[in-house]
Image (tube, rainbow over all chains, first blue to last red; front, side):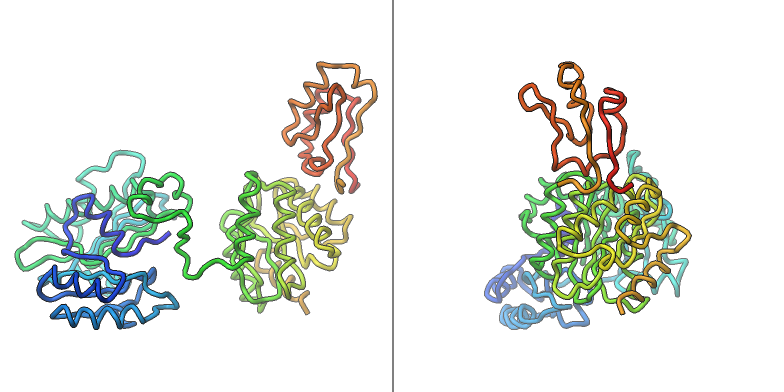
Length: 399
Length: 70
């Protein structure tokens, strides 16, 4: 889940990272009043859970409180990427001598967190990495062992930073890495991290994402940031179909059958396993299919849970058939899934043979699963058929 | 009504108090239940059978798990 900039900055402030003076305002009047209290020039920033605010007109400058009011009115009326702003962050405007970039994120390939640091901040870091690779460092660390200053110093020094800047930048990088680990974040970014004309450093903008599954363990943090349990941080409110999907998952602790997202297509998807959902969803799209939904099923769900998800997907108007596809499974059982989706079809009043376009769940108990599917006239394919080929076959059956 | 699994209980099981308790204990998906002193199967849970054989290990031939799809 993503934090708003003003929330990310609360977290940075709590851990001693210097920030511009700022106030979060929900109305133009509050923004004008905040600008008056801050005094001098201000910058007003739309609080949305998406990037590209500057280009979209969501960041404006003001010299007076009245200008701040006008700017806030414009920002609050401006949706960005379909999102209505939650408010405006009013900050004092500072003179910047140099901009840096620092982020801590998870390197899935290395299976460790990584610090990305650059002495060329403020712009797209991927572009800097391509055009000025010597100005971007990547430094891995362990999230199991205590974090040492040395790692943070190495991240900074690798870009050629020396002298008086090295120690304060190291402290900020170290703090950010600790925040990343302590709060189960998937991304903690400060960009730009600004050096001011007096030589001090402040975080001008910050972006933080927390692991969705960490919500339970991070209740204290969420309470501190006044984020309610009902605040899903999604770009749009969930549809009734998606709410029902969450209910299916919550009703039975066995396995996972959730993260249902509704789309406009005619092919229902019951997909999952080890990142398989995203791959399979893309495979269906690239084969010309029109998914009616996205979902994630795995972790050895019960027959009842698989059946409930299947029935839900089939309840969506316009869904002609479903494709049941997974990556190779180990803990999830193909036979239990076969029972579940067949039961779901029958509970929905559908003939499994006509409704299940394809069943591709290779792995654990697949022979038993194939027996069940044969009994109900459903096509089963094993791992000799790739996920992409299975998706193509399913799409071809849609007619 | 179960679609995939049926569990047959031999009548002699009802005389064995310890075994009845054991069957209720071992089944990971709660297929067995005691209705007073009578061992029964729970219809709603039959299709959840994981074919783990813990019941047949405990009761031998006095419990039979039937796959209805074979």
